[in-house]
Image 1 (tube, rainbow, N blue to C red):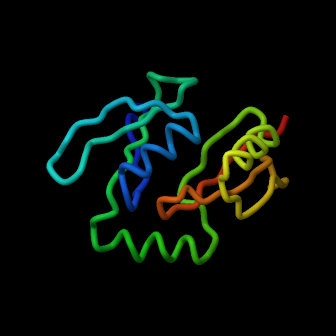
Image 2: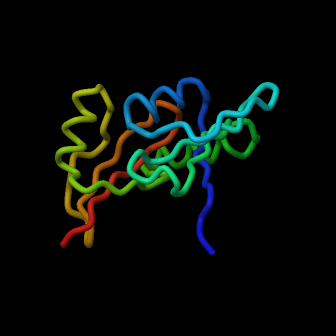
Length: 129
């Protein structure tokens, strides 16, 4: 068994697509119209056959309060792994990404947290040797 797709709830799919592809460097895997919304998934450019991230509309009534509470408490909804956190932090900062934390040690990982502009905090981690 393996993870096929996982969701990140986004306030605006078009805005999320632009951020996740143009800024973070993911690639669109599926973009299927479903009326008011889309089945819109992205994948890592480093692993195009890997786990898909569904940019899912935040339309369910429970999603808004859930996301608001996580952000208010500074809790990242998702975690993405990178090979060189300092280089990724510098690159994304230069692209205008807003980081809540600069790279720091956190146990077995080096980590930083940014705002995805779509209502979520995302954690970047680099595994320590």
